[in-house]
Amino acid sequence: MKYALISLSDKEGMIPFASELINAGYHLLATGGTAQLLTKNNLEVTLIEDMTGFPEILNGRVKTLHPKIFGGILADRDNKDHLLQLDNLLINLIDIVVVNLYPFQKLFRDMGNHQPVSHEEMIENIDIGGVTLLRAAAKNYRYISVLSDKEDYDSFLQELRDKGKISNDTRLYLANKAFAATSGYDRYINIYLQQLYSSDKSDLFFFPDWHKTELRYGENPHQKGVFLSPDRGNLINQIHGKQLSYNNYLDINAALKLIYRFNKPTVAILKHTNPCGVASGNEQLTAYKNAFKTDPLSPYGGIVITNQKLNLETSREINNIFTEIIISPGFSDEVYDFLSRKKNRRLISYNSDLLANWSQSETFVSCLDGILSQNIDLMHDNEENWKVVTEKNPSEEEYDSLRFCWYVVAALKSNAICLGKEERTLGLGMGQTSRIDSAELAAYRAKKFGHDLKDAVCASDGFFPFRDGVDYLAAKGIRAIIQPGGSKGDEEVIKACNELGVSMIFTGTRHFAH
Image (cartoon, rainbow, N blue to C red; front, top):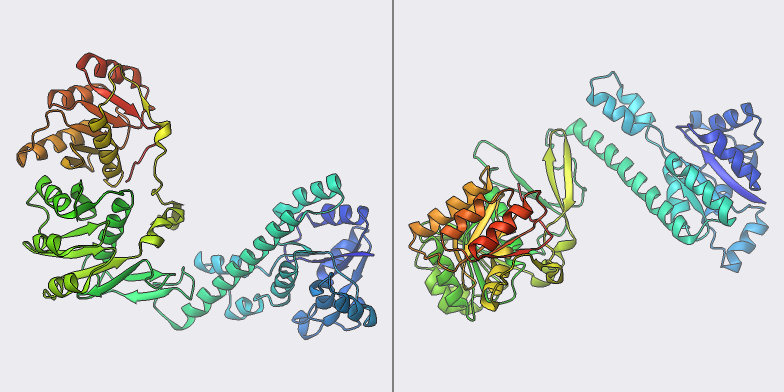
């Protein structure tokens, strides 16, 4: 006989679901309240206490915690000894477990909405047996289907109708969902209990085993700051200098997101999470000098990052001005001894292998009374999808510079424009309310520091909605542009490029960063 165990706090949808299980040949086992509702609807059911021979005790606190239940759930059905033990003890195998938990989370939210909920009610709604049933059934998903969410009832029954059984993939999916349910449930309990004795809310919504680093303060001195991380600092390692601040972490994050895309020796200088100069070259020192030339004023007190181990020659050049943070895949003893002479300078090494897998990560941003999440924008673009849309093709040298500027503009705040040539930045414009403003800012900054834009190239993180941007850039000497495309004004923009002798590439990918 096939058995399905049902024990539900939220019984919505249970009757039609249970009816179809009976029609499919399953015998129902249930706890008190669930069994009463099934019986009231003329569905045959066996009380769990009748199967175990042991009554519910302690006002229902103990009702499913019995070897006859958990033996039937946890048995390895490929293990003959397990099956023999069940036979000897007259224990029946259980094939389906349908459980949802006491409404602790709802009561917690009710408290947050200032509805009266007593401490005693909260404690009584900490589910023990339900969580244990879900975990046991999910652990043994190779043989058992565990349903923790009523939203899965229909699809489960449809698969049962169509195939006569439930696939391993579905059982695995349901098992993972059950563990997610118990994990989230326990986290709410953790938050509730912590609030009873602690006023520190800084880590309430993170996993309890995350590493917590107290910061001197947040973005400003009157704000409290904490860094929480699940990897305990494996991605970066501070090897010299005073404690990192809230803003330091943001700068390091921005620097790593920028340097990630480059293979040739590349150096970037950042200030307040935005690059003020980036360059690639055949050697590191040349790359640093060209990055610095983009804007010689801003690097003071900034951040320098390299994609290759920092050498002493470049270190000496960096040392000519105060740099708050220097980030590199590694520091030789010679370089470390030289750079660590300044106590107020921070030296950060990073793990290149972990950084290569960073694109699989997610970002989280607090928003309103919730959290926004998305995949991190770190994937390399597929250049096979890039398309020249103008009559004029970029030269090989222009194409290399377009690729370089495209990687840089992806790290700027939108609207963003990167002007460059020979794989170095000449002018950067970002954070403006219109794209033409960013183009004007980039050209202004290039002129301010004496950079000739004749035959330079431009990368734009978003499309050009009108031709005014192209007209302006062409007048400044720009001869090739790379942008995502996809605007209603694309035809007008392409026409402008053809009239002005400017080549243009559409990438089909947008790197827009608020």
